[in-house]
Image 1 (spheres, one colour):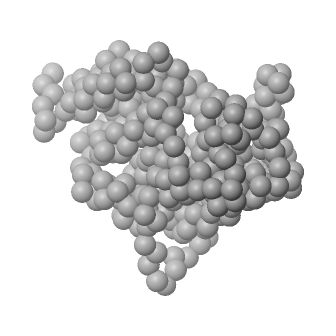
Image 2 (cartoon, rainbow, N blue to C red; image 1 turned 45 degrees about the horizontal axis):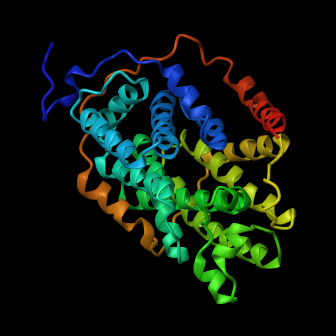
Amino acid sequence: MSQASPENPVATLPQAYDLDACRELMRGGSKSFFAASKLLPVRLRPPATALYAYCRLADDAIDLGQDATLAMQDLQKRLDDIYEGRPGTQDADRALAHVVHRYGIPRGLLDALLDGFLWDSQGRRYETLADVEAYGARVAGTVGAMMSIIMGASTDTAIARACEMGVAMQLTNIARDVGEDARNGRLYLPRAWFREIGMDADAWLANPVFDARIAAFTQRLLLRADVLYRRGEFGLAELPWDCRPAIQAARLVYAEIGKQLEREGLNSVDRRTVVSTSRKLALIARAASVALRAPSMPAVPISPVPAIVFLVDVVSRDRRPAAEQRPWTLPKRSFDERVEWMVDLFGRLEQRQRSNR
């Protein structure tokens, strides 16, 4: 067997890892992304699963561990091993090693992702909307960039639009989870917004209650997300036609969370907004049309929003050609029933949510 080297680190990548184990980690993360991944072409489901599994594992390691700094050091060491072609025994690490070497994922994207997770554990304060978007760029824009590369779209334009779509989704998450985050001692609404109206952010965080002021903050966040969704949608034309429905489905379902929140009076302090199964399925069906007709790119180029410029630069500067096109080891079970799986997925998830209340 050939030896791994800086020039060919993939040569001795271990083949044995459990993709089903990675899928379970992914299932515990973003439900909307987990569902949308089932719309991806079969060839891209394994790398998408591996990527999201690693994101989930890393987030839990930093957020739930006893020492975030030590967890970060361990994850950085594991990334060193992954990029050197000698990952450890963890299924998620082994699967990610295949992704980064097969598709040439720049290390800087994963470093930025880990930084965002660390910001959470450190209780970082977000003074302005730009600060919030900088956070979103790390925890979600990075994932958008990596998925774009996996799909074969790595131009500056494609990466910028994918990152902006990711930030939009993160802003939607923040708008939906204002109360839940506050009860966990976290505030992602810009503190400058509180000061603008003479409101004490820390006092509110100690006793989070919903009123018209919080509704206005939530609305501002959703309006900004809508702008970024529209920008991100222009990137669909850069993707292969068979990848567009999955990304559009995730975009539509996430944006619908914001619309449903508006219909409910923008109160995400006292309850968590949920989009109905029937509505999600209708949006997923609508997303299929984008395969043949993606939005046309504007005549004038769109400059990346400031928060994601560094991610575009990372990809432009550091992306390497794929080291090897080795076939993925797929799970033994067939994908033949994936359509039926999609139909009842959201029902099962909502039933689980109700049982956990």
